[in-house]
Length: 162
Length: 288
Image 1 (spheres, chains in turn brown, red):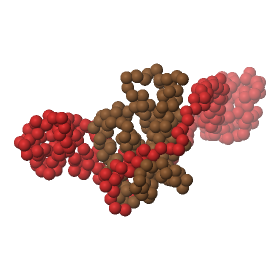
Image 2 (cartoon, rainbow over the protein chains, first blue to last red):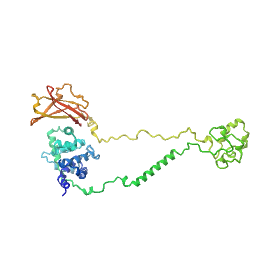
Image 3 (tube, rainbow over the protein chains, first blue to last red):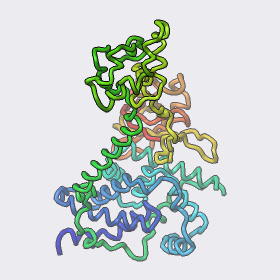
Image 4 (spheres, rainbow over the protein chains, first blue to last red):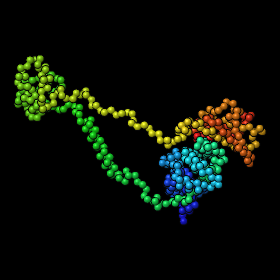
């Protein structure tokens, strides 16, 4: 098994989760997933093993996401079918699950601009520090904090007006 | 729905982002090993060149037939035989009848030249009998008689300019604003303008430098060096807070009032204590 195949085996699950949360729509998420691995494979020679492969991979993913004009910022893709809703709620590991609140939050997440959505999702993945998020997004750490704060306030405001 | 607390929001976002799909996607490299997409204009280079050539030719011909078919230059007329002056529009002398003009055996002979012969372009020999005044009118009368050749007065005047259709300057379309960059538009909810949210600034420094009263303040400057906010530097608007003190380092935070910072850009900040001593300063790029 080559190095790349090992990376694919190890990180596909997390990357799937990340792509789905970024895009909302499963079809777009899968396209993003495929494009990310394709680009990672083509740029594998540029990867510095001293860095976290996951951070590097997610940086590629975010760049493709950011530059993808198909993925608009508005909530056009936020509405789920009943089946998709069930699947989403079933996958949420929260014992005190308020179904409506989660669906509202899910919709509200996709009203955020892309740059704020990326920061929020990376942060709540709980696998990256703010410094790593700053490195993934190529922005200063202060901007990460600022965007996080703004995103939280926008979500709070939106959920309070639902 | 009541306002959701920050803690609950944090918890929900964490749970939401931890939600895993039933099946992860599978990377399919075979589909990506197809040959790289070649733009059609490269693959069909010859065809594209031929199409361009045809297109240019068609456009040129169209323009020519629409605008270029009007004779702007005088149609060449055969020289009038027997020494008569070359015809010019409105020139009385050009059609002055002369004996040589009336000769059927003019050396000019055929075609147009025939048209200028007295039998076709001139009235009969009675011309010679015209009075001098009628001589002056003869060009006009001669010009109105049907001939096979264009008369001088029928020529396009050189002062006439071809008229081209005017091209409308206003675009027929409106610039679309498809909302791809919402952060350039003022934030609105339900159509109402919303104040930009407050901005946080952080700084850390040696905890020994904290003042005894623990009162920390912060002031913010825009990129032009203008200080923002209340002129009273010790008002509550400038109050900062101590986030934590850990391992001898203090982390302080300043939350700007809503509406203090309304546009993206680089901002400088200075944390100071109640005596004005600077505790920390820095610069951040703020994106709202």
